[in-house]
Image 1: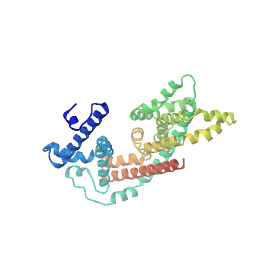
Image 2: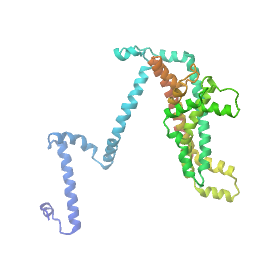
Image 3: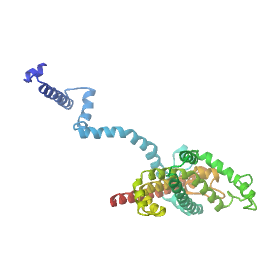
Image 4: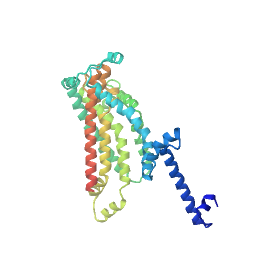
Length: 353
């Protein structure tokens, strides 16, 4: 038995020794905290103690402090690589920022002049219309085909896993590779698509897929759908796997047909997953740049420009960085508005449930 225990009159039994040990430990921690605060410990330990003692005073504060410590690297990363560029882009949109500004640092404040120039530009209206058509068409076709494939693969049959793996290839291939392949496919003189159409006598002359506006926009739409369908299929198929099979069996017993089961069981149970797929598809499609730039370059004659490619063209082709930043901010506002709508509808649905 230790001297402290004998002075405290602690017995030799195990419970008494345990109580005494806990009391000594608690007293030591209390003494250390008081020593840090009162200055009995000097040097770095005193400085550290003044900051850590209030934070570690209670178990709740210790958990909160630990959570902040673990979240700090992510917060610093987001501020440096997302927050700073965003703020810089917003400030640039209100300045006359040119190539000379990179060297001189002189970028006069022009207010909303960049935004007014963008709104008066006739290409801007074309870019907005193309963005709407491209986004709505891509999301609708990707979702419809992805849902059909997810329902098809939600059954057990030979080579199910192999076929699903093969269908993932368009999504796994880099966009630059996919864009180059589709540019070759759509070539007017040597493209595979025109050769098939001519050999089957579906057309009498090669189709200029990438020369006329609507043909080029339709070609881009098909290419983007081909890339995005596998992602929709995987997410929706995962949602279908989470629906209890007992519901379908009970519906079959009640005489419900396949279409009725899909309407009254599959769609309602799949609604949260559908919201996620549509929102992610919307955000991705709004910022599609590389596919369009590789296949058409925004042409012919700005006919397939979207807001993403228009912002790039203004900044790095016309070297009008302020106007390019303004277009980027407009695109960002549109994405944020739809994200807020998604969050609001999701909360309303959760409250209703």
